[in-house]
Structure formats: C-alpha cells, structure tokens
Length: 415
Image (cartoon, rainbow, N blue to C red):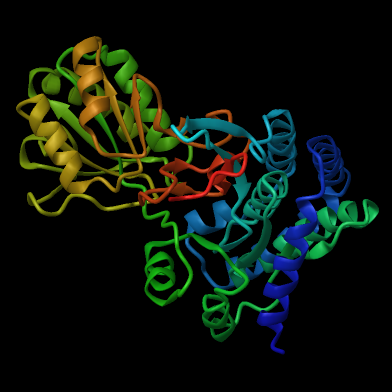
C-alpha cells in the first residue's frame, strides 16, 4: 500500500470515531488545542523561521512570505479562532422537519459530516490549525497537503494538535499532514475518491486550476480575490477613503484586499483628488482608465479589457463610470465572485447592489478586509468558496456538513 493510500484510509477510518464524540468532549479537546498552541509558540516560531529562511533564499514573492510568516500575534489569532469555534453551535446532528406525508410518513433532515476533507494549500501554515479545528468539531477527518514552503511550520502546528488528540486517546490521523510535497504524491492524493470526500485548494490561481483539472474528487474552488470598492454618487467620501486605504494597504497579500476601485463620475473629481494624495503617501502604484489617470503621477493607462488583475501588492486599478449600472457591469466582467463593496448613503442603491452583484460576500460601507471567517463570526474558515456548490463564501462549521433524510413510519408500504 502506498503512503498516500495509507494516509487516506487511516483518515477515513479515524473520521468514524468522531461520530461517537459528544459536543462537550469535542469542545474540551479544542480548548486544550488552543492552550497547547500558546504554550508551544516558541517551538512553532522556530520551525517557521526555517521555512522563512528557505523562502528568502528562494526569492519568494513578498505576498507569499507574508502569508508564510508566523509570530506571537498570528499564533494567538489561531488559538482565539479555535476558541470561537468552541463557542459556536455544533451543526452535527441538528434536525429540521421537512413534511408529513398523507400516509403518515414523517420526513426530517439531519446535519452530518462530509467525511474526509483534503486541504491543498501553499504558504499558509495557519490553515493547519484552522482546518484541523473546523474539521474536528464538524466531525470530519482532514488531510493537509501544504507546499514545501510551509512544511516545517505545518508539521509543527499539527504535532501540537496531535499531542492533545493522543491525550484523549483519539487517532492522530484525524489531522494528517502529507510529509512530502512531491507533485507525484499530489496527483495520487487527488485520486483517492474511495477515502476522501471533498478537496479544497487554497493558493494561487495556477494551483486551483491544476487541482480542478486533475482531481477525481469533488473540488470547491477558492479562486483569486479581485475585490472592488464602488464609490457611489451618494457616498460619504471620507468613509470611502478609509475603506479604500484599509482594503488596499492594511495587508496586500491576501485575497480580501482591494484590487479595483470604481468611482461614479459625479464624485470622481473630488474623490480622485483625495485619493491622489493618500495613495501616493502609501506608495500605491496606479493603473487607471484615461480619465482617472490624469489625477495621478506616473499612472499606467489601462485599455478597457486590461482590468481584473489580482496584484497582491501596493497596486490598484481605477475606473470612472457614468452610472450605477455601469459599475455593476464592470464588477460582473472583472470581479472574481469573492468580495465586492459599495460606499453609499443611498439605501435603495445599497440594497440593489447587494441583490444584483454576484459575489460570495457583498458589503455596504464596510471594508473588504472583513470578508474572513473569523471576522464574520465563524471562528475560522477552511476557505472562501467562489464556486457555487453547497457553500459560497467563507466556509465554517456548517459548510463542512451536509444533510441526510430521516424517514419515520409505522409500517407503511408503497402500493
């Protein structure tokens, strides 16, 4: 039996043990995992530094190094995320009535785990803790296949979580890390449909396309985050400027950072003059249509079909539009179904924007940076689904379950 087949089968077998655990027990394990992460943060940071050193030697992009970096603050955020998961309702076993048929058969649905979830990701060691905790509480085994960039960090985090599982006599294969990033093993992993129920890739567009094209297991895509801020003609421009700065400059290498700014022509002159000052101070590179470009020094003029890039850097695309409808059309053409924001004081425009824009998260007068499982009260997220299977947007506990039918009768037979 190959390494990958053995890991997959062991994860599927281990997942069955979770069905026997009550919510109180699962929560106790998670509380101890959060505490263990805090206690072992020096060990985790030491292992992470090995990954960071290799990343610098290999000239990884700044955005990748940012995602790879662990420090006291980020480890604390992982621990706090697990504690929020503890506080959330356990979806497993939740019931809802469907109907009672004329013949007396009663039909309900019950939430049940998916089984085994496989995460394929790049330089994101926090995924190890987030996915491990979310899958544990939702009753799923998880297989984690990170890139070589984060292997030592991921193994360190997993080993801390394993110590808690062992303390409670639970199989460590509930949270499995593939120890070898070889591409051939990845191909084999994506064929394990007898053991793995769902694959979720997180990373660059190339990785997600590769997994989608080669997996024989269902895939939930987390494609690139081309997020826009639309500044409506009825916007509060001070709020709009704050949303722009927070969305673009607070952290550039993440999928919920702003990559596009769309401005209604009625406020373009005043707002773009404000933008020119602050974006220059922040060192943001400007790409813009010919109208907007004249407000900025050294702006690159974009043709109509050159928008829609995910820069993951201090860089943004700006377009001035003649109407609300034109803004929605621009987002439909160049967005990535991730997160879109409108700044407006017009409630009707806000409601229409949220109803008509096709994105997994649509915000009114709030930063795109809130498009995150922890910020939306999920504790953590296993990904942000931009495809439309059973989940759309940040995936928390409920998204890691499905429903089965429960049919109760008193001896009815079909005529």
